[in-house]
Length: 273
Image 1 (cartoon, helix red, strand yellow):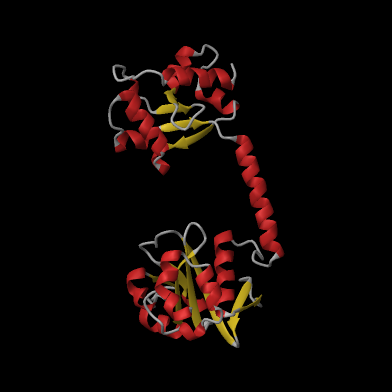
Image 2: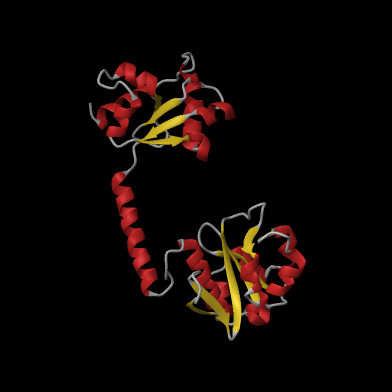
């Protein structure tokens, strides 16, 4: 048995509607040679005498995915087309999918990522073991606010300064903000004069910026614990898209506009053009 046999059987399964069968209740499916080609593992085992369980698929390079984890739209479309019924939320949460990754595509992508990382290292954007979004956001902050990044005397890695003033930089990477807010350690604010929040979208462009006095944050938002959570609803009046109070802290307006998402750039363009 090889991959081609598996893919052929899955293709065969997809040639006809399966609404009259009870296979719609199956929770383990196998993805074939196409984004919308799926067949129940139970059906495949009956059709392929050399296939007895899912572990054998793993030996052929398949990997396991949980539909409920990421809402794979191709599976939903395939399921509803084949079985002529809606894929319920409950069914989706139970469903496991064997997928055969595009190994060449994955390898090429990893190689491309490696090359990109090397370029970012050579330009002193990636400096340590922090995750990529954090380091890109910190680099944006350095460019926009003219920060100097120096090795910290403590174990925290790097410190940021604007002139002689200590600056705490926090990067949040997501298309939407967390309901809990951005988490800041009280002790780090107590050591800094300013707090810079860089909000990055998933495409690594800046979707919002917030520049605050650390003393103000400690006075207005601090609680009894060691951690402060800064929520959007509490900060939105101070976002760059809403407030020009700290425009004078921007040393490189070109960088701010260049790396901003278009929607964000339009809101601040008249102040930094």
